[in-house]
Structure formats: structure tokens, C-alpha cells
Length: 114
Length: 113
Image 1 (tube, each protein chain N blue to C red):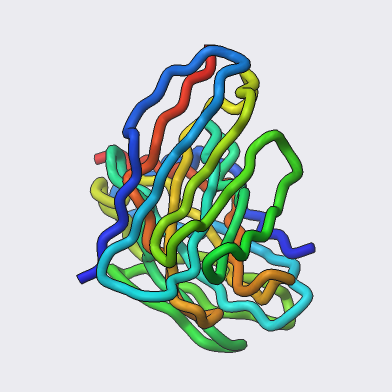
Image 2: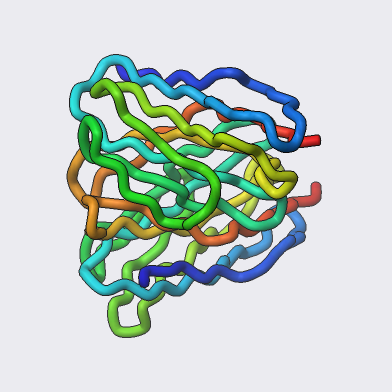
């Protein structure tokens, strides 16, 4: 079945450091890929997405490229801020037996220190 | 605009008692609906999803069930709760295309004692 694997956290960085959170997936079809973010005390919200191979999703300085050959969708940011502290979830959306479904990874907690 | 509601926000129930969590969506029609459980340190686990009234797909066999009696209403139930059912339950909706993002409700914190 479909699955998403992302690097375990927590990840602790200093402000202005570079961030990479690895995400790989297994899917039977041609999924769309997403990164969701959960800020402290808030609900999950979409950060960025890519719907086909080689697409790059970007938002708020974050970006991720859909790599079909390596089945990966790594999240990157060149310079993190304290306000980026949150839990980040990689996810895929694919066609299941009962319709479209979305599978999430375990989440990676990011702490950014001033 | 679309909004998604869940209630109750928190719930404490004894082992063996029944459960009913409700989710409703406003401002859209024929949404795909989802129930997830978020356990500490374990991410989001998809429990059920539905593409229409009365159509339920289960991802994980367990003592929970789901129903969709109306287009924008999704209910998560159990006849007898287990300690392991404790967690944070999230309802979400999306459009019916694979690239559509999901929109999440505020969640219900369930503690089974």
C-alpha cells in the first residue's frame, strides 16, 4: 500500500541556518505530494504541494521538488526563522479503492533557536 | 467560504463506553471527508474516508466505525472504547481531485480512562 517516510525529529537549528527535511514515498499510482505544517496551538495547514514529476512547490521561502526517479519530496529552506518552529508533515494523495485518499508521514518537529 | 466544525473539543470517557464524534462542513458540496487520529509522536493515521453519502472506506481495522448520513456530515463511532483509543481526532475535507489539498477541523481530544 501507499506510505510516506520522513526523517525523525526533533530537528534543532539556529536562526538563519539551512533546513532540509527528507521525505520519501511509496505509491501504486501517480500521487500528488504535499507538505503540511502545524504551528504550536494551531491546526494543520497546507504549506506547499506538487502534482506531477519535476514540479516544484514553494511558499514562505520553503520549497520541495517532486522527484519521481527517487520517489522523494524533500522540504528545504535556505534560512530558517524562529517563527518556522512547528511540526512538518509530508503527505501524498492517491486513488484508493474508495476514492482519493491522503496518507501522512509521522511528522518532523523543528525547533529554531534565536 | 468553507468551514469545518468538530465537536466536542475534548472528551473524557471510561473504557467500554460508546463514542460519537461529529464533523460538519459548510460552504461546499459533495466534499471528500476524512477521519484521522494523531497520536503523540506518531503523526496522522488515516482511519476512514468517504467520497459520498453512505460510502465509507476503512484504512485500519479496529473497534471504530464511521458513517456519512448527509453530504456534509461525518460521524466517528465506537460501541465500546478501549484505552488505546485515546488520542487527538481530526476531521478533514477536500475536493474530489487527487491534487486538492485537505482542510482540517480543530480536532477532538479524547481521553479514555
